[in-house]
Amino acid sequence: MGSLGHALQASAPGHAKVNAYTSGQLDVSDLAAVQRMVDDLRPTVIINAAAYTAVDRAEQEAAKAHAVNALGPAHLAKAALRCGARLLHVSTDYVFAGNASRPYRPGDACQPLGVYGASKRAGEEAILASACPGLIVRTSWLYAAQGNNFVQTMLRLLRERSELGVVADQVGSPTWANTLATALWSAAARPELYGIYHWADLGVASWYDFAVAIQEEA
Image 1 (tube, rainbow, N blue to C red):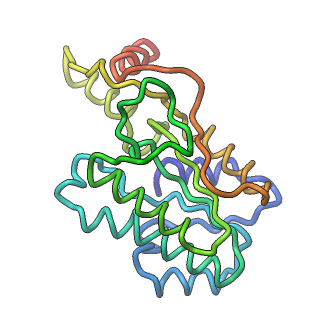
Image 2: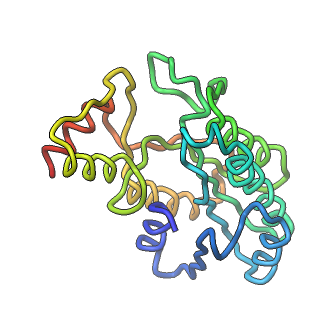
């Protein structure tokens, strides 16, 4: 289970009965498996935190990225519609080209530059094209105390090397998995929310700024 899945479990409201699945327990690219799970549980809300997130490796594993990031949401939307559940889907700022001089708005035109972003956008489009009452939440630069993310990578490299090179020309809003999880649970309690929303923590940093902050805190 990824960092967001752990955060969602840890921050679940007391009244919520949570059934969490790892990728080994449920393959979202398998429509029959998804439908069986949803038919058995009959959930009122489905939160899709499953994703293929290896941005660079996706260029060589396009089929795998598409299966998880595009087919997975499509299957969940179909199963959610079948049982009357609401679907909350987590997406990414990689659906954009990344060359804007201001924060992206939900209605801005998408222009993914790589396989990862294109696969995530395809997942969004599948949900939007379905009749499922879906909410898509795009986030950016997600990090947590566990899992594969920039913070954990920097901590490892800082232990292994005396000097690191980090790019300073890419700017974004690092977002803690715990705050995103809290936002998702809040959204789950508001059935009037639908369509596409953006959620990120406050603040702006380059990857270099983020790396320096990680070093200082460590």
